[in-house]
Length: 210
Image (cartoon, rainbow, N blue to C red; front, side, top):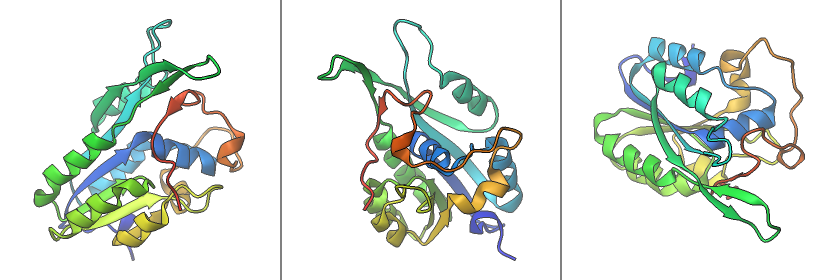
């Protein structure tokens, strides 16, 4: 029987979670991630060295509060290593207040720094910009798995990223395992039809799917 995410008991493993990308992939599929369950199932299946979560945080100057803060704080106190960056505020051509931020560079640097101590690296992102760093890490003898989805509309996983990874796990297949339960069921919606409650004014750099 295949273990959760193809994890192996004796392998030193690390998670690198592209927070905005994973959030949108799950929302496209109509569920939320149960991060407590994700961590618990992982710790049972392998030697988890670190689970890192990367996200830019929108700090509204008017409200002095980010809707992401409760999630970030919970993850920080419950076994995840948090890497955050404050978004930059700007005004678009229509005069609307917008926010821009990305932690892609931090994620790539951390993956390269940890690669020599790992047997297996799991990237939770569909961003094709990570293809080259995955290739470099594989050259060090590290197995790389990617978790994202091609079952949403539009697909969230870059085709070139899927081809480069040693294994690809579709997030849709994990809904019954790490999907958050107890809330109202939601049907999957195309990304263009919804507005994220805390990401509608957040611009990131993962719009690169093939």
